[in-house]
Image (cartoon, rainbow over all chains, first blue to last red):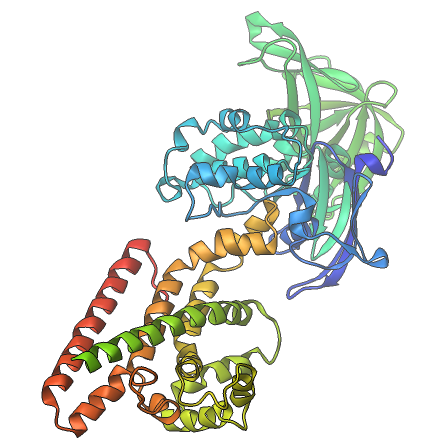
Length: 369
Length: 224
């Protein structure tokens, strides 16, 4: 994965009403890039820059194609960029039927002789929207409208899909339903997605790449787990700090209702409810659920005790009594990264320092999807 | 009676032509007033709104000069072999358009502003050029504003008196409209004719307003 053809590279700067935007990044042009940060930090502005809805100074390169560049006097207008944009509120056209809303972008793509790779039947089935087509936008619930808005964006045959907190205006039920669709949207339609949210749990479920923003600035970007485990970034020190690990169910331990899951650098055991062999999982392990021992404990109720090597030990910025230890799993220390939040006293007693072999005990593991 | 019919026909013609021109002229002005970031935009808005407060005779006076042989109207008339545009039907149309402009621009401006930026942004991200978005999204959404603007423009042109008298005079079949005719009939104590025209105007105005209200109710939003 290298070269400009597989990347989306942007750099924007300028003054807005609330902040000074300074956003430079380079992310893969595949999978889901989560844009994460507190409310009002410029996430939406960044997305609007990508769509060309606002013009800040800077440059934007999409898979080797220049969408914006001052030095070459290039600025593609939104309708020339082929981006799908789903806004926070569904924004269906009230003067058109649901069907006409869905076809709006598709018709224009066809008129511009764009190859149709995403067709209506596929999208309608994917969003489970069959029963909505004959109804008027005004008669749909918020969640139903947002599903149509997502379908409308997909049908415009975009090269890039931008989702601006599409769940925030919805109730829990609708949120869950749409979340399930969003998990597959990028791979199913082979399209890079930018997903804006201030909810870390949504990021843990969806994002492959994470782009962190704070007060108008991009402060870090990279693969989700790397950004989570980077001591120089705020997620590392957050009270809910955790890492997301991808795993695959290897074995079911039927009598105990447990499942063995292979993760980079080891195997862990989790509750086997509703799992089958071969399932790909996204697991989240909180730093507060990880503790360390220098030898594998002879008898403990904790099932997961994995060997690894300490990568870094950093004081927790939030709490002077604690440190956060980053461990790479595996005897050689080349597996997945884990974070563990322990007291400074325990750290001194165990003489933890970078490079030292250690065993990580994991008290609980959340299956995100 | 022949007189009355000619007057009614001429008045309707004037109102119809003026309204059509008003809609064509006001749409870009209203759009610009909503979407421009120019600092002098409010100056333009004030100039457009001027006929609301200007005494019709004052407006009529300047129009008379502009339409006369020395003004741009005279120059325009020269192109088709005339001498002046004052006291002609065409001159009257021009005067009406200027006089009724705020009554059409304002409802359109409100209607365009009520749409907000979002639907146009959605259209742009769905591949619609600005022109396409205007035609397929802004126009249909601003529809009630167009009805309101057309009705106000039409009704206002129908009822103008001062400006017509200043620039059109009272030439039967050319510039003699209902409002002037009523005044004339009353002056000459022709009460029957005056009654016919005034009652007709009253009924017509009521019908127009009533139908508009019904129409805009159905489509949801009125532009006023």
